[in-house]
Image (cartoon, rainbow, N blue to C red):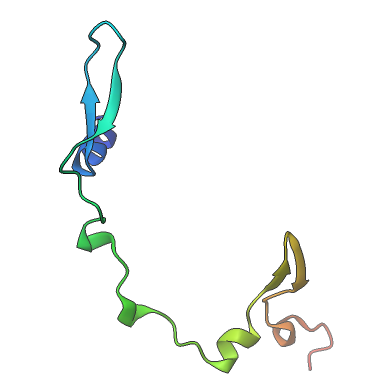
Amino acid sequence: MSAIRTALETAGVEFIPENGGGAGVRLRKDAPITPPMSVQADPDEAPDLTDAFFDQAEIREGDRVIRSGRDRRANRKDGA
């Protein structure tokens, strides 16, 4: 439990003691706006958006899958 509290406090959450109205939380005025650099994604590590990437993409219309993203050739039963 203390690890969760420490993580929240590091992110800018301030725990308010009970003072007649009940305990609570609020964001510190100087709370960080963006997450620390250690959790931000590095844009250089993003996948290349090649034709093969999009060929393997799952296509959806709402909750309905129009085309599955799996490689159909890998799941063939005829061994071709």
